[in-house]
Image (cartoon, rainbow over all chains, first blue to last red; front, side, top):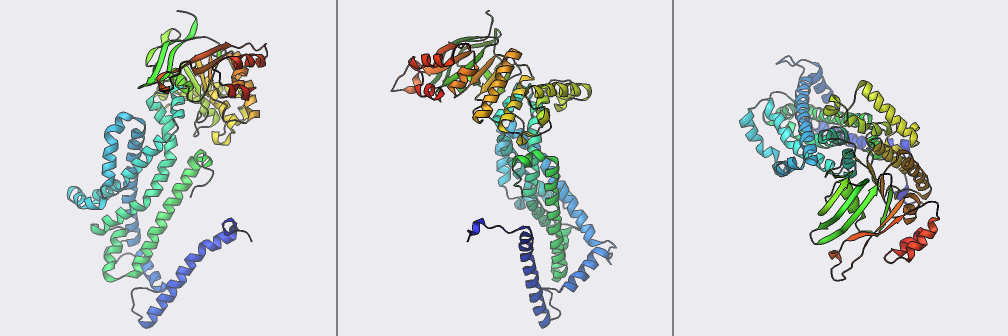
Length: 276
Length: 270
């Protein structure tokens, strides 16, 4: 009898074991939903799968009766646009300030304490300020995402830059590189895969801030829709929307991982293939 | 001035009250291969950092070709560390081209890259050097795909491409297996003769120091104050010219009888 810590499932075993919890959850939902619907066919809390299908049909494939838009796609487009802008701007800020702080002591001395202080402000607490300053439009939502995640990315990249072996920077100097050349050829390429990691880790928070902002003031967007239909207890719309958001987040995470593997093979090789 | 390439004129290095190096008066001619040995913490690395330019002498001056040494690492100095001397995100070839790519015209200044003909020339030079160190067929591999010995070969090739006035080696073979280390000794010995290099090598391995260099320096403290061990710094206590025609075993015996030599090191080396 080998120890349990030494026993490994084979390839098919891993797949089956991976799917199993989802099947159990699904069965659990089905039986609970059936039980409630048997008691009260108008129950809205745990809708049957047929109601989900109807709701998805209505939201995604039929124009809205009121506006003539396909709501799911309109919401998805609006949310993704805000998310992309927020995350993109945060990544750029993170890269500039993170590498700058890590490499240039005269930049770090004034900026590092500021970034630390800013990162400790709870972003949701200043959402009202953002609405007052930037209005209820797109800008305040994007700014909330930026304020929420860019300090994390900045601090992470600053630490990663610090962690580059000093030997490398000395070697680059003896090869004749000036500060800018060393940053562009030695530091930046080594920080890029770490930037992708930082984005993957902060995407969850970015979604959180996006949905929070949409819930409070918006006219379209995935978060807006969920909070709107909550008033009618429309679980048949909310649950598919939540699944859709999860699927989008998963797709983004997966694409970023693939991108990193394709663009920075040396990084993953040096980590010994342990990257999930 | 004299014909020496490196000159130390009464150089001291202190950290507050802690004297690390004292009264260094040394001169090295072009083409010499200086092996530096000494107990741990005796200032070998500080000495190398002075030469590299990451630390400055507290007193005295260091001259390179008769001029005060630039207080910042630059192309007149090549360096190979024990680890992390190559760039993991560049292939072997790109690692070797980097020095040339820093030195070009406009694209170099803006992006640290070369373009067109200049790039082709740099590639050719880099390939030539890779062939010389036996890495030609690993040109397109990343350092993580190379063994420890191959990475050190690459680091040496990369440093030599800038044709530095002095080459600094900081325990370059310390992390390698004995067999590989022997190959590397052969390589560095050849390159030294062929390219007329001036080399400073720190090593823990006394036999390596004897075997490779043309001159052996032993760093140690001449003066000792048991109450305040940090009061006095290390100096070069022995400066031994090495002639490879003579058996180095005899020289080692001679060294072992001298006072102040770390005996254990001599025994271990023989």
